[in-house]
Length: 83
Image (cartoon, rainbow, N blue to C red):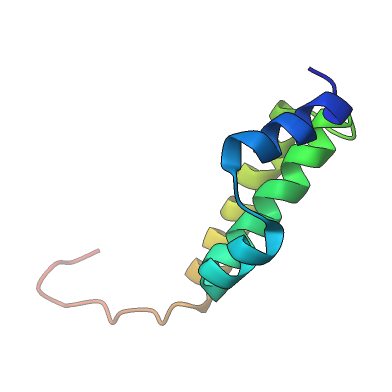
């Protein structure tokens, strides 16, 4: 289904206006809905594939985990368990 055909059918399936959805969504839900909508449009328009999105998602999470690990305070080594 092309994007032109996708959007009108999607609107019928949902039955809610953008303004109604915006009013119902929390700030966090609104952010998640924005990311979902943008990624869906970019994939449907062929800007990138779902595989490319997934690879970049994993890359970002790995970088964040490495950053968190580097910032975490190091625990003192106990003398009860020699290294």
